[in-house]
Image (cartoon, rainbow, N blue to C red):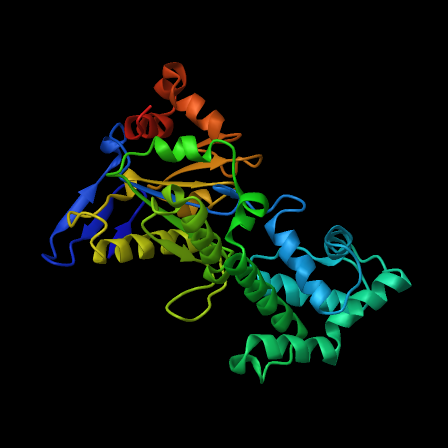
Length: 333
């Protein structure tokens, strides 16, 4: 169990029940746990025409919509908007389709309205239920059925052709170089607030076949919609609770030393704002990408992974940025 008041963290050793306190005095040390985002950080799944657009296009074609993947991607983005997780986003999209309006409230033309109405049809729902199996036979919500089929189809496509990841979910520039700089004794794990294991685990499994040196480096994965077999919607402070949930799972699996891990010696890395300052406590954060997020104490930012490596190798930068200094002390740079 972990308690954090913003100045010190308390770890309870589950075996001895002893207490371990940590404070900011340790900020010149190295990190021993790196928790990272996955899509958008390690793999490039979200750009136009990449994995998620491709799978959505295939799913819409299965529902009876006509057009190429590119044409259906353009049609989808007129009305689809990301809202914390795929199910919530898809249900909201279906509600807009019911009133023939796109995401800014503009009416669809007659052709687009007809195409999209097929997603609400009984035929599409029956087709998706048949593909999804028994557990969805009593589900009739078109948004839920479409979202679940999209996730399932993405996993099936990667199972049939793992090398698709090299094109549709390629590694971000600098990913291998950054990965290779992380010492083996530093625990590296993945957390994703908005994505599911149902789609990200198949991506990692495909990489385990086509690039095993990448996949085997990670010690664990935890996802926003997966919580003990149930589903939880990401919310304010979600990462704060999930990262320690994951840390304890890794601890119990023997992948973290029994002495435990300090919240101040843990680094969270992602492609956008990962948490709010009030929820950050003693956790160090680095955002990598176009959105620096909530910068402040214990945070830093780089435009890409090459830029991050460049910054931590620059003594002038690390001298004034102690999050980057700790990362410099951690990596083999």
